[in-house]
Image (cartoon, rainbow, N blue to C red; front, side):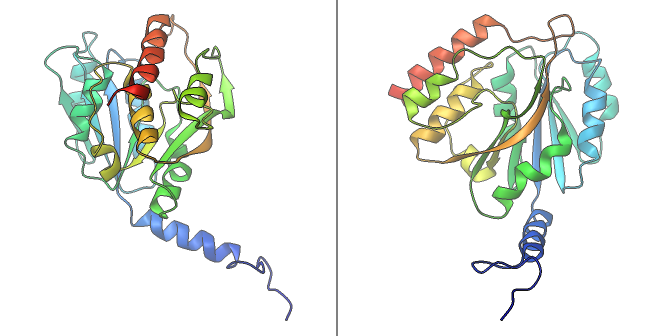
Length: 246
């Protein structure tokens, strides 16, 4: 019998598979965690872009002791699907993520920076593999996608060497998790070392991290970029430490 258009011998028609994936995505609630520190110039635009994504979601913003007027702006933007939590002082990105995780109610969790370097319009393709049950963890890979204005990190090879994992972008902001999985990881991080810690502990527990290509436009220090070479050294140390500890 001839195959119908779009049908293959080993699986359902493509439109059927896409429909199943869309239905799974429609049943999924997403928690977007956004740590914020002194991002008055960009945060309102990023919040609006998150709101426009057609996924059932909550946005939990943790203001990490901002001093530039960001705190007051966030309070004005709160409401509906947007919740704002305030840290008593600047405690670090890792602590902000940990606080938001304790209050997350979604089925899937994604990390979103407030600086505009990442595009929330890419949520559906990042969340879909988890919603469909194909994996528990997805990373958005800049190196498999499109990059503007970023220096190549010099420690990417360490994940492959230490953990025998074929990751291209351990340091990506767009980390997406099934909520029960990320909540089961005992995190110790306070700052930018969240990325290597969560990656290390997931890999040691046997989770396969799926990568999806994303777009990225980096900022310069003049534009407000906060991460620096010291954070890179902390990341290297964290990758080594958690390979053998915990």
